[in-house]
Image (cartoon, rainbow, N blue to C red; front, side, top):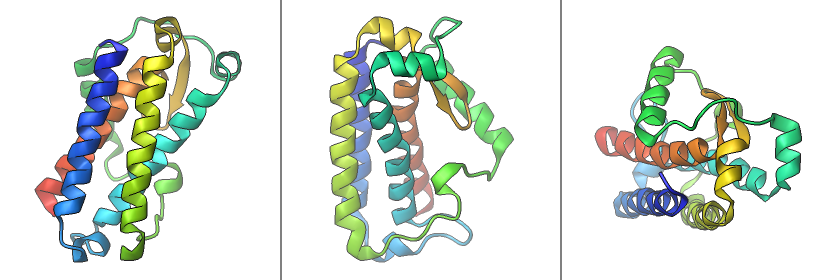
Length: 174
């Protein structure tokens, strides 16, 4: 998948998520199904996954190469990335990583702020996706808590799917 298509997919998936948030009753923001995240927690989780990616993509590429290394395989296509994620998700069933563990429930007063931040961070990610060279997209790797080290192109495709995955979860359960 080329970088323009990835940036467009991130925009499409993020817009669908934000539209869903906008159309929901405010009580769903702080209350979810028994034992599941609230709508606000889904928003916070997605923000917690996009911000570090934007931060990494702001670093000098030589720092990324030094810190994480170079890809030692060809880049997987979107469908393979999604399939691999779904397989790993099943194996990890119920495990939460990083800052999303023991996540607070964002109050309703933070809803607009979190939606605005998701919009801004998605726009930054789209911009950075379009600006990075194809060589760096395919050769530089970043760590993913569930998937291991991935070429940047794959992490960007995964990010689009991750947004869609949470949107679908929200649509199905809330």
